Image 1 (cartoon, protein in one colour):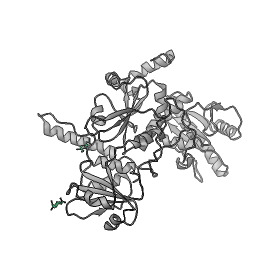
Image 2 (cartoon, protein in one colour):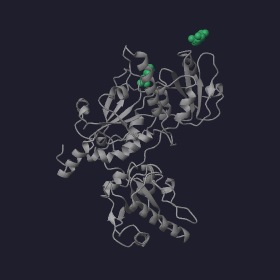
Image 3 (cartoon, rainbow, N blue to C red):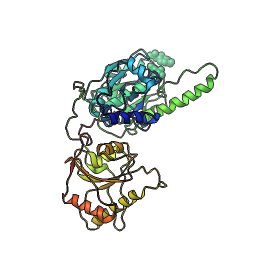
Image 4 (cartoon, rainbow, N blue to C red):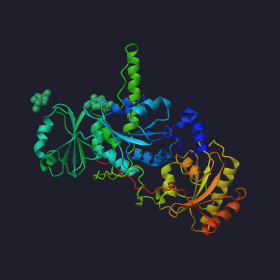
Length: 479
Ligand SMILES: *[C@@H]1O[C@H](CO)[C@@H](O)[C@H](O)[C@H]1NC(C)=O
Ligand SMILES: *[C@@H]1O[C@H](CO)[C@@H](O)[C@H](O)[C@H]1NC(C)=O
């Protein structure tokens, strides 16, 4: 398996493998759920939700390349499906990976719950390795426990399970959104879900529905229907439904041993509810919907990401560069990979300057002097231009704890523990330039910035894969 690696890379991989925490491709803070041989059954196989699992080895280049897209898919699918990863390089997972038939890295499998608890169907995902293709494929496989009913079938559905709680979504759509399906999974066995199209005039008037989508909760028995009028997001909807019935804890609480059963149970419950809170409160920051049947699981393994332009790639959502009248302001910091992408690494982003600096954990952290000087010089240059109302590209600080900082450093061959490094880059034109001046004094840095401004000096080609060119996944968290 090491055949394709140079000796140094293999040695580095072995060295990296020494501390237990360093060998996982996904950190604790990653949106990707870390799964292993021990918890696979509980977290994935016994879940009522669909999951996708990446089986990987940390040293594998294709796995590293997949990481940004996979994390993006995970963010996009939060609260809708599970996006997980198993490190097959970890000795304790090797037998498990073998039993899953893993022969190469990365291998992606979609796990869809079946009627039999704990016996899901597992299929290989052979689609494109882009966030969009992954999201589409997974969304397509979210179980659908939402009954589509019309005027004629309303009565009989209402009578089914007479006293149990029910939720009806009135919608203009002919499809069943990922969000309502995910909610139905969360409340499986506790609330029955149905969807009625706005064409069902009888039902619409029975419930006095005047706009779409509208969600109505029927507590069961003789109790009155409650109309939801909050935000159409998973978090608040879950809270609304929870006044009648709780979502199933996922993972289900472990069965406790006889001895200190009560204690363990309450622990397990607490843990489970924490886990499920983390899972279901999952963000809902996007808007559009519609599965659109756009699943494309036809492309080959090594398919190249498509070149279609990304919506929202303009740096508008990134932290704004300095905007100050009198005194130089500190450089804005790119804290998340999303901010980094929008500011500097999008296929449409123009020139920007990144100051690669160590992590700034809190206000007490002292940066190395070179970093402080460099940041000071940049903010002075920015300030000067601001005062002259000159147009200048933005400057940002990129601390090493940004989830993508190491990837950027690796791609540009910047040492991870270098005190400071200034890089100018242009995503659209795919070039970068490194600052190689003497020290980081104001004048030297300004000379460099001016040269870039005037297009002087030699540029290098940005390594492939640094700027994201893939299509953005659609969002699916609307009713
Ligand atoms: C529903 O339950 C109520 C009370 O339990 C009962 O009176 C009623 O007959 C039931 N309706 C149906 C259709 O089963
Ligand atoms: C799965 O759904 C069933 C109801 O069909 C429920 O009893 C169970 O708790 C759910 N399991 C999980 C892990 O959510």
